[in-house]
Length: 291
Image: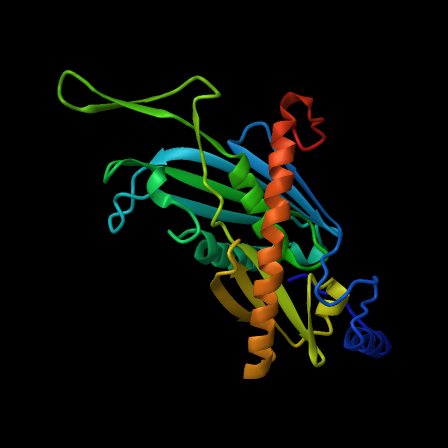
């Protein structure tokens, strides 16, 4: 994970501010930085989105391909995640540092999103035991200034909302086999139901309080963080502690409740923004990558 060096005087300044619910940039402990969400930014994907959170920028592209269902769940499709930590985001992503972080992020994303509680994976099944849709989710970190998990999860939800999967028509050939035809009509497509797709909220323990959307400077003052994925109904689907420090049970309960409250509040304005952007259609000015 990208880090910065913070002097003892800076740490004291940050700690005292957070103690009084006033962070360096003027936010409260449970406030996010300015966020920008843009969809349909990569032309050669089935769905894409770019999220800018402060000075953290994430690009997500989704490609839908026909594959074979997994043996234990023959009536479901699935997602595959790949995270590319660009060395342009921070020099610390060069070489093994970026690979290890990419693997760690991919594993957490798999646990959060690739389950029946987050997505209707049955809708991705074409023919049980034979064919299903596999959604390849590629995440590119363009710029890093802390809080990668939250930015990535919001970008993934926006990209899934933007994803259009061609409608499949199955017919039988003369020998009794199945033939699969994909519709050429761009409007004859299947959309992914993102209602239950969770958003991740990362809470950093700093002093005796916790903050959301921590910057790299605040992260340097934190001993441990709690990652919580929350649905639009406030249901927590996954939790994980990161960092070398420890958290006492009382802090975990407080951070969990705060994460539930903050995470639940993220979904409604995000979906409203995505729906407004889609309603503009061709009138929307595309300014993204390869738009």
